[in-house]
Image 1 (cartoon, rainbow, N blue to C red):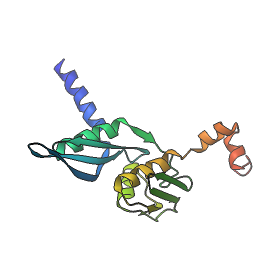
Image 2 (image 1 turned 90 degrees about the vertical axis):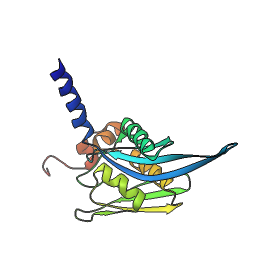
Image 3 (image 1 turned 60 degrees about the vertical axis):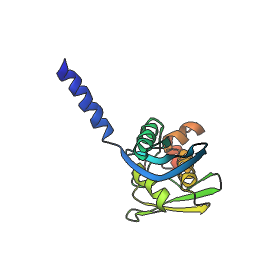
Image 4 (image 1 turned 30 degrees about the vertical axis):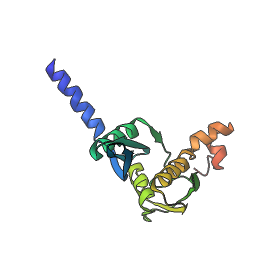
Length: 180
């Protein structure tokens, strides 16, 4: 019985190690009370499996390590699946959150990740190797990360597009059987 339990725990740990976590931002928040100041921390974490799944979350606690742990757990629970085409995205997309706007463009193989700090962590967690990205407007890290996730949520795979339009993939791409 104990062997089975240990196997389950090892299996759980194996699943957890597939994820990559990036701490994007840690803020110290001060609450002024009658007895003095009370400090707490908020941490923004990006979590991904580097194969097309990514999640972000904000964790708050009285200690930095607990805030990061809470954010990591929450990010792993709230992941979205992003369709990828090779090492890049299928097509150009824009996203916005608050005063931050993000433009993400597909790039040819070997280009690398051309993106700013907050966006770069989302790209790396997602597993994108070739992309061009630009942040426009406010540079607030939390808003930039949310705008990036908003842009990725707009992406659709070729299968999803064909299903939405009621066509086959061959009709959508314009390829004939002879050309394939």
